[in-house]
Image 1 (cartoon, rainbow, N blue to C red):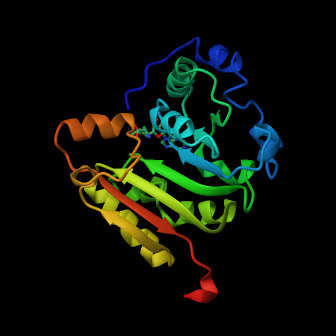
Image 2 (cartoon, helix red, strand yellow):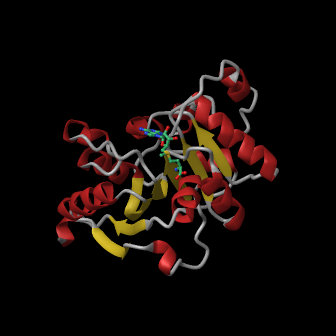
Length: 218
Ligand code: SAM
């Protein structure tokens, strides 16, 4: 994603505390207080301009969603997407690094993790930055409920193959794997910005659902 410097971004984010949570570490273990209900929490790491998480939150009012994005200049677009959609009580954003999830969530806080078109980091020396690297899987497992799931979509075949290997060697159950999502899209598939762009060019979209299993049941 091309990043444009937006000098006004910080101020704009601070002006929308109802959407971008200002001190997320204060809510660790008690996110239900933020949403005012006990509905399950799904998070998307690398939410970009927010189209997916907004669409999911509108379609599933009984699920709470948090979109996580690293950059000010990108998250402002997600805030605009949400403002345009109207009030969405079951959706919030965090402007944090996905590698710090343990600071904001604890075991059992999250039911499902979405990773959509994550940066592929193709160089081997950058493999640890891939959001499906073993170190990230450990992190997700530490905040998810038992048998929590990851749902992952990408256009990048190399990243998809790496992720299949990483998840299966971690001992995760691969539940649903598609090498061409749009050949037979599942009901209710909400498209991300990147998914729209790449599928319009005829590129296959890879998708998987994987689940953590108790290590003793392996
Ligand atoms: N998910 C969107 C989509 O499918 O259209 C955006 C995809 S874009 C290629 C990847 C996004 O992930 C970027 O907005 C980037 O800033 C964000 N990102 C990358 N690494 C991240 C990290 N460690 N924590 C949070 N966000 C991250």
